[in-house]
Length: 135
Image (tube, helix red, strand yellow):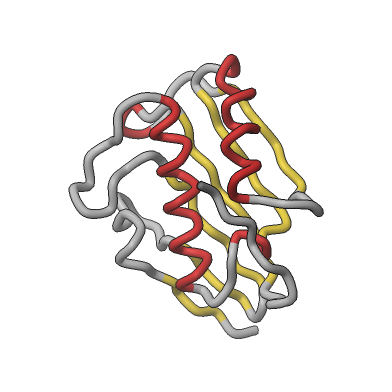
């Protein structure tokens, strides 16, 4: 087993005792990302901006590990208000295409720094899928 710590300056620095991601052979475990801007380390405002920032942060870490969001096989989404689930689905469609990863969406009472959303993921590096593009 080969364990490698993954870090990207394009995602927020860890704000605790964890790594942005840990790769074990071809499997990469991406830590939870909230809507922190990686430059200012401040929370972006509003649910729409936070959802986009979370996926941009995950994308940056995935790329630092040598993959793309298309390599994610399991995604966990944590929301302080499950009424935002539809918006998460809409934004996800810009970042993921079929076959979609397995996913859980969980309502939680609170998240770090007052975040409205957090997501973590498991990625298996394969290099055989092209990620979709938004905008």
